[in-house]
Image 1 (cartoon, rainbow, N blue to C red):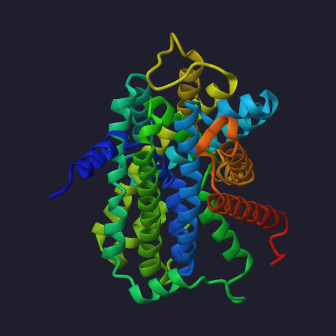
Image 2 (cartoon, rainbow, N blue to C red):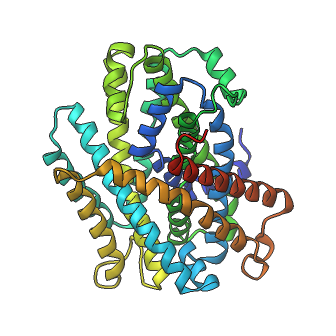
Length: 417
């Protein structure tokens, strides 16, 4: 039988669960699923090794954000403004605003693509989705919204089932997971860009802002922090397992038979003759869920961040009357993001690539701010990083900066490698 302390710990975990799991899993959005699908279809299992260091880096980034929120009771943008000034905060917020707007467009495009697999035109599916996600946050409470987001997170299990239905070569998958595939034969420009894309789609700047704001709005206290840390760890591990199985599903089928895909929709449709229509249906359901999930979270994250950075009132529990800027930012991002998908000729792919490029440049900046802030004794007290944790954190920063630099180089000079 469990001891009373064990039951107490379980109850505490269930009480604080939410921000960590939601934040990590929403990053498996339409763009992320497309990236993992293309990686698996193009390189088979050869990028699976990257999932292990990515999981470690993601846990470090997310744990730092949640700890900052619990200890200070303030959002990430709020702390940047207080400690580094309004000018720097303004530039960071404007970059984040553009990146998240572009990604919101991509989420509605992903939703439209998924519903088209089921025969629903985007002119019906996108307006309905926009109204649903708007009502969810603007008219809901934080507690209710969080419960719905947690339900969304469980639907990612469809990708694990799709991976199992694909009957992968587990021996080869395990080998390529343990042994980094960095031989000279693999290290061409395309492989490097795919590696950078996999890292960039898994760890994004908005995650730091959203998670810290969610922890603050939920009112988690320092004596609950151990349970919150587990919320972060479980969320990050589950999100990476889902990504792992997306790569596996496409490696075992599309790569094996030489199918070429350019999007998550292509991957879902191509699975039917190779792994069965159930695999396609599960993949499509997962894409629809991920897109709608992210179309709710990304605008919310942006509204949190910009409102905090500018010193405005904000939060899911607010209204247009007491937090007009927060609610109008959220509304505007959804309206523009959904409308862009319905306008013929809008270069969504170009916008998405531009946002990912800026995402890669912004991520090391936000990570540096986070590590500097979490090490301020006057801010964090006894909850600053220890030497080992700092080594891992700064190592992750250097790795991300290196990958961002390589992304810039390969964009400017694609034939260099």
